[in-house]
Image (cartoon, rainbow, N blue to C red; front, side, top):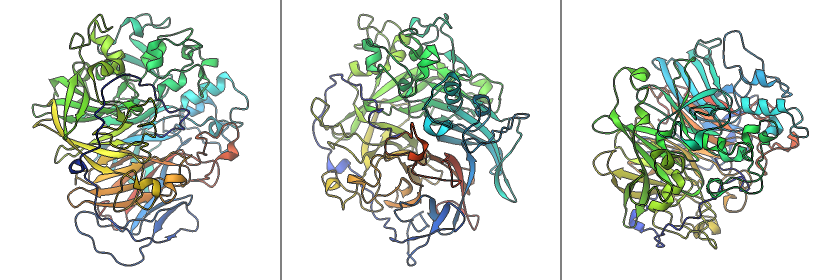
Length: 634
């Protein structure tokens, strides 16, 4: 998620060597074609969801059969002709817990207790778990952060313990039951599966960091229990049916005081935070509880089928500003988890489980992610790369260097990666695996600090200084996803060829876009790309022609790329999944109305959108269907 630069973490000051050579053009796979007609949208008169009409019939090859929508700056969702998009689940909608169905109040006067039974703010990663094929299932989704200017009636003009509690209740995860009915897709209320997980939900700590001295607090002297998860960005899902939610910019919630130590500084800790939780919840005051922040930054496993189950922080996967955790399998049946860390000059990780996935679902694999090998990526010149093992006692990770145990390694995964010489990346975000080819895609959203004074210069994997547009990097493991060597290239370098600033960045032919963030590859090998241009940048400077954030579809077999959707003002497009039959797509629209400062504090009127209700803007999940009932994208 592209936060305001004042909130964007940039704490890697390690001296890892850089390659300092521009990317070999042979490694740069710029997408070809996919030129959509530049047409104006025809908007439904009473809805904020619209279709864009083509100027003339167009012929296409390959798997993409829709006419791409135009660049847009309208406060609506635009989808191609022949498709319909409907709002399903907004911030403040009741989750569906039996006996607890609070109604959303448009003046934001819902209490913290009511918010804990309602959709949280700022929908992000999402997955569909089937209950009845493609007709009924569970949606698990993240609620990344909050805009307190919208969450409370009077924003942050006053501040209180109740407002902190409501903010904490608006974070976390929703699990909702959805079903296709004669009236379209609807949330099932009440549902025995319905659940909200928030920043105060009890959780268990498992893996090598459980019980570690750096995980112990006054409230939890054993270091095995923690309250809550927060800043949940992207996600993952496992072959055994569980949901993985990932804690990203957790450091923004902790206040350090005047003298943070080197460990806190390496994780971007600062004296004050924009969320002000520490004023009424002392566990976020690092001067009083210095270890509490070590208990965040983990991948959390949730069983969506059991609303009574305790979420578990899986520390063997390492601690990071986790964007997501994408799971695939090795040839011998082990779990392989790819993870990006959305911060400037941070790293890409992989975890390979020690044991094979067992039949029997979540119960049979309840500790599978607690044992295995953690790696960090190094991208070498010439299109080759290596996964470097992060293990106590391996290479420079010695007891003398502060890595006596694997608990030390996973808690200080950044410092360990610094020591082993991993490649500093341009904000690695979502990762997706093609289920047919096993090719792995990772969005590198942008990094305007690349090449600036006292900051790392360009290298083979990150070839552009002042990288405002971002890229998508791709790799293929040597024979097996559990391998330690791989081949890589640039799937696309994003940008706008008509913009002078973009010309120095590299260009993309086809539908222009920048700041790729969300990414998913469906069962047809179509790559769905979502963008997150910062609101302070949208339609300005380098992004003057690119319009509001969008979702595009790419066919790697032909090189075609097309814009499938554009979002309302100030939003990010994030989170995408379909039902197994590919005929229903769920997409999240995050923070519509976010002003140029990224937060509408202290005054709500600074919001730049009224989507989707014509009033206070609300993040929401939308449902997209093809009008003829066909496969999405055809």
